[in-house]
Length: 159
Image 1 (cartoon, one colour):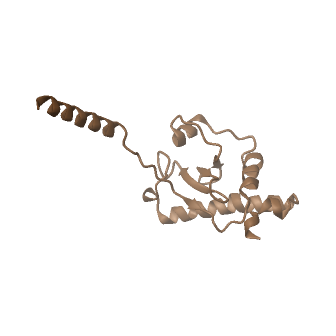
Image 2 (image 1 turned 180 degrees about the vertical axis):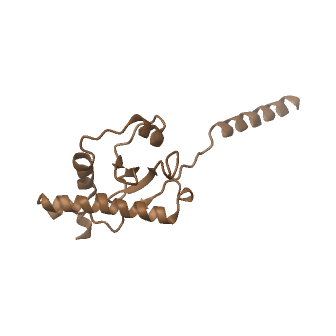
Image 3 (image 1 turned 60 degrees about the horizontal axis):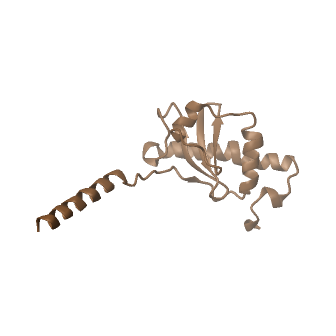
């Protein structure tokens, strides 16, 4: 009987150890989406890489703020806005055409803001509108000025 009780206690301790070490750390995101945009995701990526971020490299200090030493995925980009307010947006392309995961604005926080609880609705709206005006609209204007066919510029599911 004592051997069975010891095994049960040992099993209980092992289970407690595993659950303490392997808890799920839920990471939230701002999830600022642009579902009303008709831009093609692939064209937007090309624009950001070749026009918006041309000659731009993300400083290690900023990369550490967003990734804590991890690497950026192929579906993510960091965009820097150098006019006031100076801030960085981490965007993801796994939704059409993209969405904002988080931002870094040293005037608002010492670190990345990825949770809507830590930013006012007014600031969220400002971030959303800034992205629309300074990225999405400029992408569309650039495409039109460079005679990019609508079939490339826009998502074909909206036709």
